[in-house]
Length: 461
Length: 65
Image 1: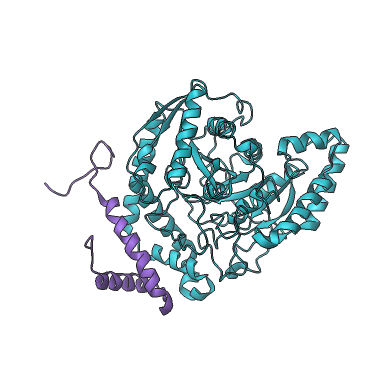
Image 2: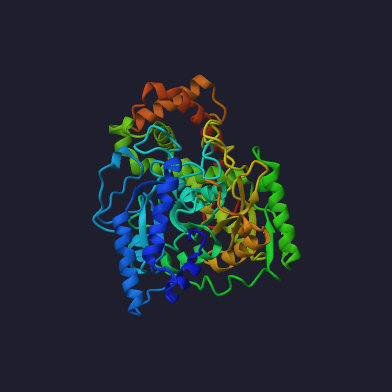
């Protein structure tokens, strides 16, 4: 059951070969069997799931079809407000918070007939982790639980990779969707800044935050985006742009598309694994063989993107948590405190220069799309490290290559490229012009096919 | 602020900025925070590079006559 895609499960629901209750029960059984070792969930909402599923079965039987998510189980990172259901941000500071209302994304998924399985672990406030001094243990990587799943959408990545659920919502401020996707071997979509509402999702950095799905397949992410995309006048960053058709061209292939590779991003990175780079080159060659025009391109120095994003993120994060940092410092996890406090050291001139630089960098990436339909580059330059390695620090030399497109807001999708010799997933990013998620998903789907990832089974648990 | 302060100057700078922000740093956190601060601080000069009219056409000015 856990191998059914969202589209396949939807067809099975409509032909009567399965029921939403059966899908939900299969997911709950998988969670019960595997999550003790993985800690993906901080709360399983079994009663809510069965109630949602029974309603979906009743509605579908009566001919009331809410669309492709109707009757499909999903889960939410525990920074998404859920009315009447605890939303902790994985933090002692919010351990008893029960919101009155759903976040916009949660409400859209509920309105679409989705079946909520529960809330997923995160790095504290989407930044501090993985940590062992928080109210819940950190999620672990299903491919090898001694390794981190990435973060901050750590539970989302682990749950999808372990087959507990086909789709889980994450959030991405510097790579918190695409990082776990790369480390766990899932697809992870950061839509264009403004494409999805963040209202009701606890902010980390208001000008860098994005909401998006992690899923088993590109198609699952496309289906999800179709449901959650759209303008929200009460989210100051939400864009009033038409929602595209994310499924129509998904299998159109890449023949004739121009794909750029900003090779200097990863070729000169201080930390990189040759297997990850070789996998990107293999995919590039396969895309070329499939008819794409693939060429190396130049973008501004990676360090400019990294610095710009880090300064903005830490400044905005500190501003959000300023009062608690002053009055309750020991209620944060140690790693969270140590990261947030750096935001207190940013000067007004630093932040202003970062905002100015962001505009320049955005224009530079826009210029690349004058000659390219999409870019491909690394998601992470290494497979998932172990918890013990300590290589989880946020630093200038971090192996994640995701921050540039938080800075510029362009849509970016992490897609698996294969398994390393150590049996850990590797991935790459597909990046597209602003609000052209359809092309990003189309190229991502081609990568998924050409890399052979569709044939890779779930990790043995 | 100089681009490459000594470790002592860096620590003093951090202590001042944290105090100015009203944050009391738990003493046992301080050493590891200073490692992170040094890394972060070393990135900042990248933000302050010169900009020409080509990069920001409407906002370039000079205080030099």
